[in-house]
Length: 151
Image (cartoon, rainbow, N blue to C red; front, side, top):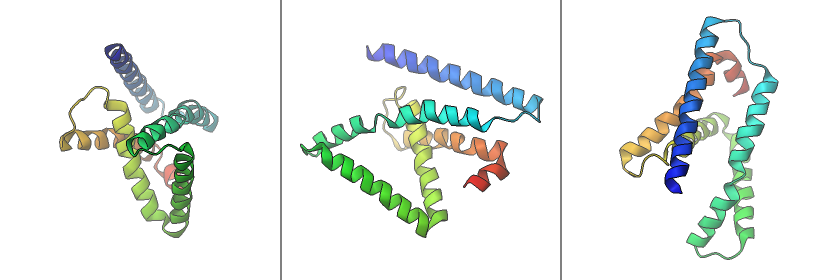
């Protein structure tokens, strides 16, 4: 079963990689091609929200690891961390953004790659970071001014 999941994930990664590269070629070919904000919103809603919807499952695993029985602890902690991040964002926006982008880089790279690699070395952790960093760099590379305005 695990091998089947690995194969599906590998195929998904390959197809995604192929589609992104094809999109980049088209983007370079037609410089005035603009992506609609609605299309980006749909991608965030379809991929992003479903990605975050599994956080409670990871939370339950964490609670078991620390031998905590109440799931309310996870939800309270989850909301408290969100509030702290928002407060830090208000007080130190530049530093918070840099830390967020670094964590996001590692997270994206790990979530997309860990099913292929069983090794937990420092090299693997760095690989996760740089693979995810590509996701962070793409908007900066293709739409620098708009991305900076959003940040």
